[in-house]
Length: 543
Image (tube, rainbow, N blue to C red):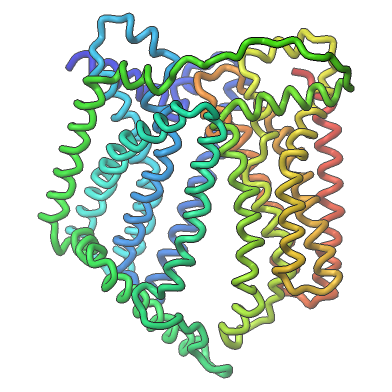
């Protein structure tokens, strides 16, 4: 027990890097850490505001009583899917495996402490989803004390089951990847299957009409309908949809009753069952922890070196080739940065089945005219740039950064190679999407021009901005690639900064076509100017 407490304390000390922030001595580094803590807080507040607004919309449409069951289920699914990709690095990390196995420490406390660490992370993430949405439901319906008690129970109990399941799924996924010769390719394909499945699943439910007998009808109010009539119509449609969901999936109704305080005993039994599974997971994995970890990280098989014909190439292309080898050697790096381009590609294919203009037309007489085609270039550009390789390309060098610094190569050449590789990586997805758009989108000549130019400019801007963020916030000291690809300051800032791509979209889609074209043209010029300024700043960087 003493070993478990000590190891758990060590695991939790640096949760989200708080221990480093507390004890860092360098004033400049402390400012960076403080700035990132503030940015993280702002992101959490924005996410909380979005969740609050969506929950309030449900309450207005008369389905506020469904908020607990929907958002708690959403939190559980999110934690489980998110946990699948971090299980190996969080639970079975190999950096300290040799050190721990040489110490007089039993394997069970190590596994249990790491499971607790993951549980606490999931608890905090789940609380961000549960707390604002449940409070909206409680305030709107003037809930009693039992509801608030259930809200607290939900925050503490819901992350238990996803944490236990992710440990087992993490073993299965990691074992599948470890046994395959092409580990990075296998991991990438696995992630792509999950991403594509997550995109197609809502379409499947929509086509099935959630247990209905026919396609869902969107045209349910007249042209001259008032706002109150529209709200009532939307409320009836929302209630009908949720009723069919509960009919098709009976566990949702039972789950909602537990969260609303109508079946507290059932909720407590669920929590007890989850806790038992959590304990069994810790016992079974802990008993064989070192053996499992060793099998998940088999030694790499090196091929015999063969001398081949030598050839020369330019410095830039040699550095780009090095970037490509480093990129494709990391499954975490590939799987996280390829999701955005895949989203964009799937969206262009989906436009063949879901025409934005048709969807808006079937929605009835909207208060204002909306030009869907004016919004498409900006949405597509944002999807391409969700997470660019450039935002992590500097930090991913890690302890090997000194090697590049000792080479007779200018820093600007290194930066240009990182930018060029990111653009080359995204180029095939861009060209494929543009080719598909020729057949899936009905647009005028000028609209097709914007569909061609805006995503390209967005990619240029996002790649340059990502590397700029990495130059300003490099992270060369890390234990796992997850720290720089998913959790670094540069990645977070780059993902937050690219949201400016959407700003011109709103006036462009709401104003007349002539004004929309002017706004789009001005946005292109502005993003190109910003890209030029960022590029000059990157080339002048001294690291």
